Image (cartoon, rainbow, N blue to C red; front, side, top):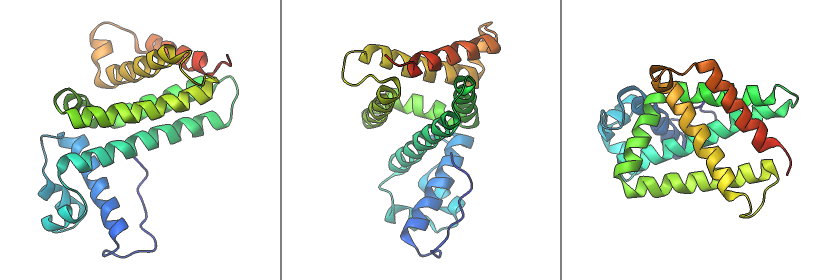
Length: 197
């Protein structure tokens, strides 16, 4: 989800450092064994703390999962900004590759997110709120402010996200699609959203 952090300025007792370490450990565990495959005790131990430390920072496993998801989204959009920074004709390709790589790296985490979104209303609401924020960014990128092209932006966001997940999970290739062709379709979505309206 993010580059290995170096925890400057605080020792093991620093609350923010502890919280960050817990989220790092949780994200890695959720991405290795899935949401159902771990618990708060295992997360705390993986972060280097006694199990009781978990509850000083998070209400439950769902709360830390949502913190990890929020960070996941932030890292994804930071990657998009970095891929966009140079500009030029290859921008769509750089953005697509960066996002697809991110989805591949966190495929098990994404599967847990999709499953939880179907079965847990609070996770579903949180995910919708994250997507709404992403739509605002897409609106700014495309020059579309307001609801005039909201449906087109929703389509772009959901199609891009779902196709990245399908490629990352191997689902698209298993259905007989050629990955290179799908990547070109993703690049076309990026080009379409970046064109001024």
